[in-house]
Every structure is written in C-alpha cells, then in structure tokens.
Image (tube, rainbow, N blue to C red; front, top):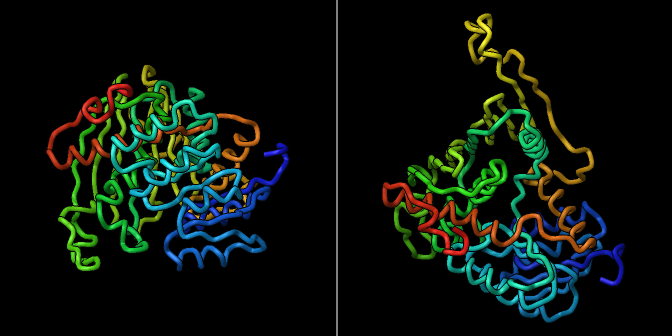
Length: 379
C-alpha cells in the first residue's frame, strides 16, 4: 500500500455464506473495497455480485486468476475447509496479508505444511476466530485476566443450537471435508479456552455421537458413514496447571433462549456470558471463613451484577454479534500499522488439534493426549 490512509483493496476467495458475510462487514467498516472475487461456483459469484453496492470487483472462477490479477492489497479466504491447504499453498507465495476462515485445516499434517511454507514470510496470516471479539465475551475475558475472579480453575462453554445449514454441494455433510463437527463447529471454542486460561491443553476426553440430525440424508448418491457429522458431544479438556475446560454441544436444541453460554470460575468468583441476550454476569464469592455467611444458599443471585454489554461503534452486527466486524477492524489496523496477526497459524492449528483429539477420543472411548496429536515442535 502506498499510504497508511489508502482504502484497502480486498480479494475474496470463496463467496458462499461466510464469504458474503465478510463482504457485508467490509461494507459497514469503510476504508475497504472488494476488488476481486474468486469462486468456482457461479451462483455464489452471482450472489456476491449483488452485494457489491458500488464496488465493481473482477469475478474469477479460480483463485489462481485472482492471485495473478494484481488487484488486491489483502486476501480473505472463506472457501470450504478442505480447500484451505490448496488455496493457502498458492496465497502464501504472494506478499499479501491474509485473513483465513476457521478451521485453518482439516488435518494436522496440512497445518504443519502451512507452517513450513509461511516460515520467514513478512506479511501476516490471521486465522479468523471471531468468538473472542463478541462484546460480552471480550469483556468477560478482560475482567478474568484482570483478576476479577482470582485464579481461574474452570471454563465451561455450552452451545445448544440448530443443525448445520445446507451448503454448496453439501460439502459440510462429510467429515472428510469439514474435519468433523468438533473441528468445523467448535475449534473457535477450543481457541477461546486456551485464550482464557493462557495455556495449551495436555489431554482431551470426549463422548458424542450422531443422534438426531442428517441420519436419512443422501448426497448425490453418497451415503455417509454413521456417525459422520456429530450432532452432540461433551468434551473435557485438561491443562498443565490443573485447570479444566468443558464443551457441551447439542445441535438439535434450537428452542433455547440463550443458545451460547460461557462461564469462567475462579477461586474468588464467577463470570458468565450469554448470547444472544448479550448478558454479562459477575459475582464474587463470599468470605466463607466468616460464620455468618453459612446458610446462604447458592443460586440466589445475591451480590451478582447483571448487565448488557454492547459496543456502539459496531455498524454491522451480522451473524456473530458484531465480532466479525471488530475482527475486520483489527485486521485492517494491523495491516496499516505493519503489526502481527492476533491469531496466527500456530494458534489456528492448535484449535484444530484439540477438535481432532476430541473426535479421536469419541471414536476410541479413551482419553487422548495432545502430544499424540500435535507435531513434535508444538508439544
């Protein structure tokens, strides 16, 4: 870029539902223009073109053409999970900053390949992990890291939601394409656990299955193995300090009120974030050394502050409660200032590895050590 105030020219690779969501965030953010779009699926390109609103991007069927066009200052990669290796192999040879959607890859060995290809590269590669930027979640993390609940011992994340949406060619109905539900859907939760606890996990225990969703579906004559796309699971993650995290996932529970619930519990208090109500709860523990506090039952809400948390600077809430908007702001700021990515390739790969460990645990019925999943250099 010739000047730090220039409008950033974005190239978008993959313009399905998430790619188009990126476009809407860039429109709202300002200081950005999508100058090139690549997607092999013509209806997706056409749908993206309807969102351009004054932009006149070049449309390409293949990402090679976009990379060769010279039209971009940065790339957003939002193609299907299993294509990330191929696209990033080519994109990493460019000098362009990259924002790539989660999950980074579907297999550990592919992530190792990308780490090697990116070694020594000056332009940043940022893995999109937007959950940390949701306003009540971000505030909860700030308070936790500021010592408001003391030493953190437990993190619990519950998502009770609707089934997976249909996508182009039903690619998200096959684990070989997605990496599996606990990679595709949940890697950002595992990343969130690591961020909150400031540690890398050592062991994963999981139980899950395909109980209700997609059992009778057929995809162009292909009958997937059952279970293939898990629709429910419990995952427990152990950390070196003795802290633990847990995920409770159910994808046939769309009749929930707050379908996402995150709690952080320390030795001095508890924090809770609830979405979509944007609620943050914060309570401090009583002094249990004082006799008069005994007999006060838990669950009364006494001493718990409850507030709605929102960032009024967010111009587009979108699908992720403004989190993608904030992430794009931070990516653009890092690009203009020459800063590093907030979530780099290694961190993106670690979140995938925890999901893979969880799926191996479900398949084997045994706990899985992260040392048996991660490459030697990341253990």
